[in-house]
Length: 257
Ligand code: NAD
Image 1: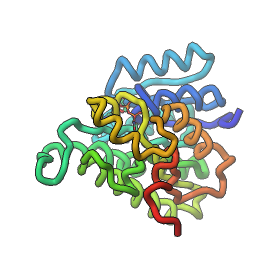
Image 2 (image 1 turned 90 degrees about the vertical axis):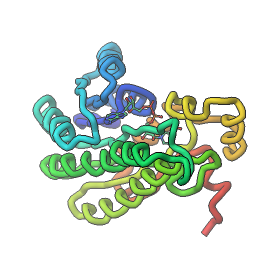
Image 3 (image 1 turned 60 degrees about the vertical axis):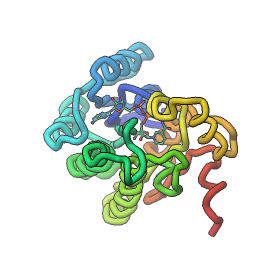
Image 4 (image 1 turned 30 degrees about the horizontal axis):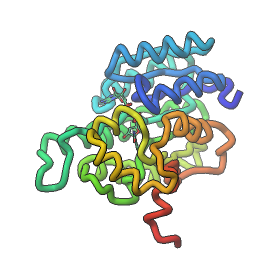
C-alpha cells in the first residue's frame, strides 16, 4: 500500500485523470476527497471507490471559487482528520479557445479562472492544511503545452498551463523546507473526453498524433500512475519538476540541453 494512512484531495475527480487517480490512490490505501462540479460523475467516482473496498467522499465544489476551495479542504480535515496530498487536477479546454485573434475575452477569463486561479486557490487553502499535517505533496496538473506550442491553437488553455507550471516551481522552492513538495504533472495528449471533444475531427486527431513519438494517445491510468508516484513517499526528493508523461512528445520538440 503506497498511500497507507494518507488523505488525498483530488479536484476534477468525476472524470478522466481525476477518476483514475481517485481509484488508484484509494486502492493504494488513501482516503480520498473527490471534488467536481459534475455531481453525477463525482458521486459515481466515490461509489466506484467504495465498490472496490476503498474510502472516498464526494463534494460539489467549483475550484474557481474561493469559498468552495475552503470547503473542500475543510471536508478533508473534518471527514478524515488531515490532508497529505493535494491534487489540483480540474481543468477545462473550451471548444471556442483558439488563436489570439479568434479567442473571445470571456473564454480567456473562464479558462484562466478554472485552470490557473483554481490551482492558486487550491494551494491557498490547501497548503495550510498540509502544514498542519507536517508536510505533504501538491500535484498540479499542467500539460505538455506548458512547454511546447500545440499545432491546433488553444491559446487560453496553453497560457493557463504555462502559469500552472511557473506557479508550481515557485511554490516548490518556497515550501521545500516545510516538507511540502510541489510538482507540475504534464500529461501529453490523452484519449479522454476533454481532448477528444476538442479534436473533434479525424484530421485534427491525426494532426496531433503526428507529434507523438509513440504514435498513440495516452490513457488516463498512465497519468494516474505518475500521480501516485508523486503523491507517495517514493518521490520524497522530487520537487519543482515539470513531470512529463507524454509518450515522448516534448523530447521530439525540445532541443536537449
Ligand atoms: P476531464 O474533462 O475528463 O476531467 C476534468 C474534470 O474536471 C471533469 O470531471 C470536470 O467536471 C471537472 N471540472 C471542470 N471544471 C471544474 C471546476 N470549475 N471545478 C471543479 N471541477 C471542474 O479531463 P481530463 O483529461 O481528465 O483532464 C484533467 C486535467 O488534465 C485537466 O487539468 C487537463 O487540462 C489536464 N490535461 C489533459 C490532457 C488530455 O489530453 N486529456 C492533457 C494534458 C493535461
